[in-house]
Length: 206
Image (cartoon, rainbow, N blue to C red; front, side, top):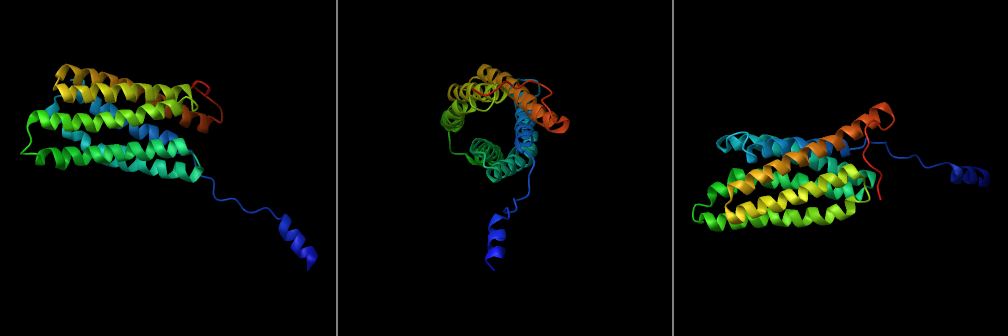
Protein backbone atom coordinates (compact mmCIF):
# COMPACT_ATOMS: atom_id res chain seq x y z
CA UNK A 1 0.00 0.00 0.00
CA UNK A 2 2.80 2.40 0.90
CA UNK A 3 4.63 1.56 -2.37
CA UNK A 4 1.50 2.37 -4.35
CA UNK A 5 1.10 5.66 -2.52
CA UNK A 6 4.74 6.51 -3.13
CA UNK A 7 4.45 5.79 -6.86
CA UNK A 8 1.26 7.84 -7.03
CA UNK A 9 2.98 10.82 -5.42
CA UNK A 10 5.72 10.66 -8.06
CA UNK A 11 3.30 10.49 -11.00
CA UNK A 12 3.29 13.87 -12.78
CA UNK A 13 -0.02 15.67 -12.88
CA UNK A 14 -1.37 15.79 -16.44
CA UNK A 15 -1.14 19.28 -17.91
CA UNK A 16 -4.11 21.00 -19.45
CA UNK A 17 -4.46 21.13 -23.23
CA UNK A 18 -1.96 23.40 -24.92
CA UNK A 19 -3.64 26.25 -26.79
CA UNK A 20 -2.18 28.25 -29.64
CA UNK A 21 -0.87 31.76 -29.09
CA UNK A 22 -3.93 34.03 -29.49
CA UNK A 23 -1.85 37.21 -29.91
CA UNK A 24 -1.58 37.07 -33.74
CA UNK A 25 -5.36 36.67 -33.97
CA UNK A 26 -6.02 39.56 -31.62
CA UNK A 27 -3.53 41.78 -33.44
CA UNK A 28 -5.02 40.90 -36.83
CA UNK A 29 -8.55 41.68 -35.62
CA UNK A 30 -7.40 45.01 -34.24
CA UNK A 31 -5.34 45.85 -37.33
CA UNK A 32 -8.01 45.15 -39.94
CA UNK A 33 -10.76 47.05 -38.14
CA UNK A 34 -8.46 49.99 -37.45
CA UNK A 35 -7.30 50.15 -41.07
CA UNK A 36 -10.83 50.19 -42.45
CA UNK A 37 -12.08 52.89 -40.07
CA UNK A 38 -8.91 54.95 -40.57
CA UNK A 39 -9.41 54.85 -44.34
CA UNK A 40 -12.63 56.79 -43.81
CA UNK A 41 -11.08 59.17 -41.27
CA UNK A 42 -8.14 59.89 -43.57
CA UNK A 43 -10.51 60.84 -46.38
CA UNK A 44 -9.84 57.95 -48.75
CA UNK A 45 -13.53 57.06 -48.62
CA UNK A 46 -16.54 59.31 -48.09
CA UNK A 47 -17.69 59.31 -44.46
CA UNK A 48 -21.32 58.95 -45.61
CA UNK A 49 -20.56 55.23 -45.95
CA UNK A 50 -18.51 55.06 -42.74
CA UNK A 51 -21.09 52.84 -41.03
CA UNK A 52 -19.91 49.96 -43.21
CA UNK A 53 -17.12 49.46 -40.66
CA UNK A 54 -19.69 48.51 -38.01
CA UNK A 55 -20.05 44.78 -38.89
CA UNK A 56 -16.26 44.46 -38.83
CA UNK A 57 -16.11 46.33 -35.52
CA UNK A 58 -18.77 44.10 -33.99
CA UNK A 59 -17.52 40.69 -35.13
CA UNK A 60 -13.79 40.83 -35.83
CA UNK A 61 -12.54 43.83 -33.90
CA UNK A 62 -14.98 43.26 -31.04
CA UNK A 63 -16.01 39.65 -30.52
CA UNK A 64 -12.93 37.89 -31.95
CA UNK A 65 -10.50 40.20 -30.16
CA UNK A 66 -12.42 39.70 -26.91
CA UNK A 67 -12.06 35.94 -27.36
CA UNK A 68 -8.32 36.40 -27.93
CA UNK A 69 -8.19 38.21 -24.62
CA UNK A 70 -9.96 35.35 -22.84
CA UNK A 71 -7.48 32.86 -24.31
CA UNK A 72 -4.63 35.07 -23.09
CA UNK A 73 -6.11 34.74 -19.59
CA UNK A 74 -5.97 30.96 -20.08
CA UNK A 75 -2.28 31.21 -20.99
CA UNK A 76 -1.54 33.38 -17.96
CA UNK A 77 -0.54 36.43 -20.04
CA UNK A 78 -1.81 39.44 -18.10
CA UNK A 79 -0.68 42.00 -20.68
CA UNK A 80 -2.29 40.22 -23.63
CA UNK A 81 -5.46 39.47 -21.68
CA UNK A 82 -5.86 43.09 -20.61
CA UNK A 83 -5.01 44.52 -24.03
CA UNK A 84 -7.13 42.27 -26.24
CA UNK A 85 -10.12 42.14 -23.88
CA UNK A 86 -10.09 45.91 -23.52
CA UNK A 87 -9.73 46.74 -27.20
CA UNK A 88 -12.32 44.11 -28.05
CA UNK A 89 -14.60 46.01 -25.70
CA UNK A 90 -13.57 49.27 -27.38
CA UNK A 91 -14.77 48.06 -30.77
CA UNK A 92 -17.98 46.68 -29.29
CA UNK A 93 -18.64 50.00 -27.57
CA UNK A 94 -17.78 51.84 -30.80
CA UNK A 95 -20.41 49.76 -32.59
CA UNK A 96 -23.11 50.69 -30.10
CA UNK A 97 -21.93 54.31 -29.97
CA UNK A 98 -22.38 54.77 -33.72
CA UNK A 99 -25.34 52.42 -34.13
CA UNK A 100 -27.49 53.57 -31.25
CA UNK A 101 -26.10 56.30 -29.01
CA UNK A 102 -25.12 59.07 -31.42
CA UNK A 103 -28.29 58.86 -33.56
CA UNK A 104 -30.32 59.09 -30.35
CA UNK A 105 -28.72 62.32 -29.12
CA UNK A 106 -31.35 64.52 -30.74
CA UNK A 107 -31.38 66.98 -27.83
CA UNK A 108 -27.61 67.50 -27.71
CA UNK A 109 -25.81 70.36 -29.41
CA UNK A 110 -22.97 69.52 -31.84
CA UNK A 111 -20.43 71.01 -29.41
CA UNK A 112 -21.76 68.95 -26.51
CA UNK A 113 -21.74 65.77 -28.58
CA UNK A 114 -18.21 66.51 -29.78
CA UNK A 115 -16.98 66.97 -26.23
CA UNK A 116 -18.61 63.71 -25.15
CA UNK A 117 -17.07 61.68 -27.99
CA UNK A 118 -13.75 63.45 -27.44
CA UNK A 119 -13.79 62.36 -23.80
CA UNK A 120 -14.66 58.81 -24.87
CA UNK A 121 -11.56 58.74 -27.09
CA UNK A 122 -9.34 60.54 -24.60
CA UNK A 123 -9.86 58.04 -21.79
CA UNK A 124 -8.98 55.26 -24.23
CA UNK A 125 -5.83 57.21 -24.98
CA UNK A 126 -4.97 57.29 -21.28
CA UNK A 127 -5.48 53.52 -21.04
CA UNK A 128 -3.33 52.97 -24.11
CA UNK A 129 -0.61 55.21 -22.68
CA UNK A 130 -0.09 53.16 -19.55
CA UNK A 131 -0.29 49.95 -21.56
CA UNK A 132 2.49 51.43 -23.71
CA UNK A 133 4.75 51.48 -20.67
CA UNK A 134 4.09 47.77 -20.09
CA UNK A 135 4.59 47.07 -23.81
CA UNK A 136 8.27 47.99 -23.40
CA UNK A 137 8.72 44.51 -21.91
CA UNK A 138 6.90 42.72 -24.75
CA UNK A 139 8.65 43.55 -28.04
CA UNK A 140 9.61 46.53 -30.15
CA UNK A 141 6.89 45.63 -32.67
CA UNK A 142 4.14 45.63 -30.04
CA UNK A 143 5.57 48.79 -28.48
CA UNK A 144 5.33 50.54 -31.86
CA UNK A 145 1.64 49.59 -32.06
CA UNK A 146 0.89 51.10 -28.65
CA UNK A 147 2.89 54.28 -29.20
CA UNK A 148 1.15 54.94 -32.52
CA UNK A 149 -2.25 54.08 -31.05
CA UNK A 150 -1.80 56.42 -28.10
CA UNK A 151 -1.06 59.33 -30.43
CA UNK A 152 -3.99 58.33 -32.65
CA UNK A 153 -6.46 58.40 -29.77
CA UNK A 154 -5.23 61.79 -28.56
CA UNK A 155 -5.38 63.38 -32.02
CA UNK A 156 -8.85 62.00 -32.69
CA UNK A 157 -10.04 63.16 -29.26
CA UNK A 158 -8.85 66.69 -29.96
CA UNK A 159 -10.46 66.55 -33.40
CA UNK A 160 -13.82 65.97 -31.73
CA UNK A 161 -13.23 68.62 -29.06
CA UNK A 162 -12.43 71.18 -31.76
CA UNK A 163 -14.67 69.81 -34.53
CA UNK A 164 -11.61 69.79 -36.80
CA UNK A 165 -11.79 67.80 -40.03
CA UNK A 166 -8.06 68.32 -40.56
CA UNK A 167 -7.26 66.66 -37.25
CA UNK A 168 -9.69 63.85 -38.09
CA UNK A 169 -7.73 63.23 -41.28
CA UNK A 170 -4.47 63.35 -39.34
CA UNK A 171 -5.90 60.82 -36.89
CA UNK A 172 -6.90 58.68 -39.83
CA UNK A 173 -3.35 58.65 -41.16
CA UNK A 174 -2.02 57.80 -37.71
CA UNK A 175 -4.60 55.02 -37.48
CA UNK A 176 -3.39 53.61 -40.78
CA UNK A 177 0.17 53.55 -39.44
CA UNK A 178 -1.07 51.87 -36.26
CA UNK A 179 -2.94 49.23 -38.26
CA UNK A 180 0.11 48.46 -40.39
CA UNK A 181 2.26 48.05 -37.26
CA UNK A 182 -0.37 45.71 -35.75
CA UNK A 183 -0.58 43.65 -38.94
CA UNK A 184 3.21 43.36 -38.99
CA UNK A 185 3.26 42.11 -35.39
CA UNK A 186 0.46 39.66 -36.20
CA UNK A 187 2.31 38.34 -39.25
CA UNK A 188 5.48 37.95 -37.20
CA UNK A 189 3.67 35.78 -34.67
CA UNK A 190 1.90 33.60 -37.25
CA UNK A 191 5.05 33.13 -39.33
CA UNK A 192 7.21 32.28 -36.31
CA UNK A 193 4.69 29.65 -35.19
CA UNK A 194 4.31 28.17 -38.68
CA UNK A 195 8.01 28.02 -39.55
CA UNK A 196 9.16 27.20 -36.04
CA UNK A 197 11.54 30.15 -35.98
CA UNK A 198 11.43 33.95 -36.27
CA UNK A 199 10.85 35.03 -39.87
CA UNK A 200 10.72 38.82 -39.48
CA UNK A 201 12.31 40.82 -36.66
CA UNK A 202 10.14 42.13 -33.83
CA UNK A 203 12.86 43.52 -31.59
CA UNK A 204 13.69 42.00 -28.20
CA UNK A 205 11.92 43.17 -25.07
CA UNK A 206 13.80 45.46 -22.71
